[in-house]
Each structure stands twice: as structure tokens, then as C-alpha cells.
Length: 219
Figure 1 (cartoon, one colour):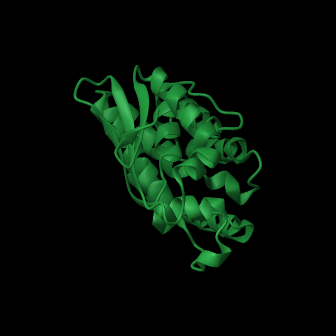
Figure 2 (figure 1 turned 120 degrees about the vertical axis):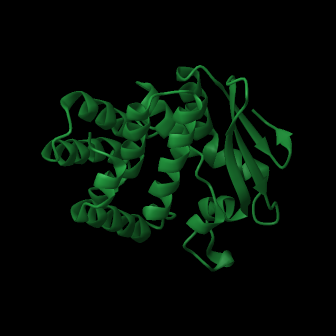
Figure 3 (figure 1 turned 90 degrees about the vertical axis):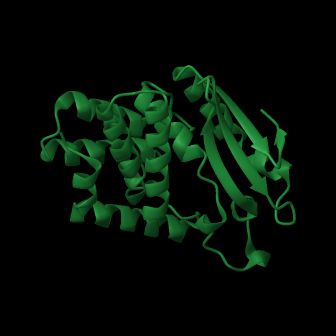
């Protein structure tokens, strides 16, 4: 079986991730490099492990998470689809079985809120892990006066965590926001579509999605 470590060792994949992030930087987007894909991979692993999925599915979701944004190298528009095609080529060339390639590429191709849907548990975990990665360290711009709303919202997040309750009925995004930089309404303005996608992805996993900001449950 192809593992995440096998993927991480590939120099061509490293190049694609770096160049995809450079494209995002040129467009003025927040960080989409190794820190992002690493965090998404760990969160997705946590979700499926906690829910009792086998090691095979856990490995696949980590691979999907690590590769999910390489399509930004081509263009931000429809990057999930172009990323899925790139991943298909990479994984097939590495000798990954067709069934595994299908799961990973469908998850990558469905992770964007514009067109995506949780087609399988791997896709569901990837969606939640990706859309909940909000943090101050993703902001590239260091001049507050030049912040756009995405910068303000990410910079305002002092801490974030994804947590599944002991009964495995709920998955919760817990945020601590500094309202000096951004209001809670700002968060909803740009992330409501993503939170809706997380809710539907959670349902695929048999969970309810909850959002807690500064100790208040909002979803």
C-alpha cells in the first residue's frame, strides 16, 4: 500500500505543493503550503481514527489531504478538479491500486464548497478538516491596515480545535476569536458556505456538526 510517508518523499509532489502555494500568494490568498496540508492531514486522520475506521481508510484520507490543493498550481478556479486529475496521474504512476486511486481522487475532486459533496467517508473527513483550518499563522500580510476580510478573520483566531464527543454523535469546531481584529459576524460572512458543507459532510459520517465561538454555540 502507498502510504503518506511515500507521498511526502516525492520531490515532484513537494514542488507542486510549493508552486501551488506561490500561485495562491500571488493571488493574495492565505497560506496553502505544507503547514496547511499537514494540519488538514492530521485533522482528517483524527476524524476517521476516532470514528473507528480501519488503518487503510485512515492512510487514504491523509494522502487525499496532503494532495488536496495541488490543483491551485493550474488555477484557483476548479482547483479541486484539476488537483484530482493531477493526483490520479501521480498515484497511478506510483502503483496505487485503482480502487484506492478512485477514493482519493474523488475526495480531492469534491473538497471545494463551490461544487463538492461528501461522496464517501474519506471525502467527508477531508472537507471538514480543510474547512476548519482557520488560524492566525495562515495570514501572509503583516500590515493590518491592508487586511481584507479573510486576513482579519484568520488573524483573529487565537486558537481552533476540532473535537468529536465521547458518544460519537457530534463533531465541533471550537474557536477562540479576538474580536478586536474581526467580529463573529465577519466569520459567518465568509465561512457560512463552508460551515454548511461541513454540516453535510458530518452527516455522511453519522455526526452533527457544531460551531462554538468564544464559548457560545452558534450552530
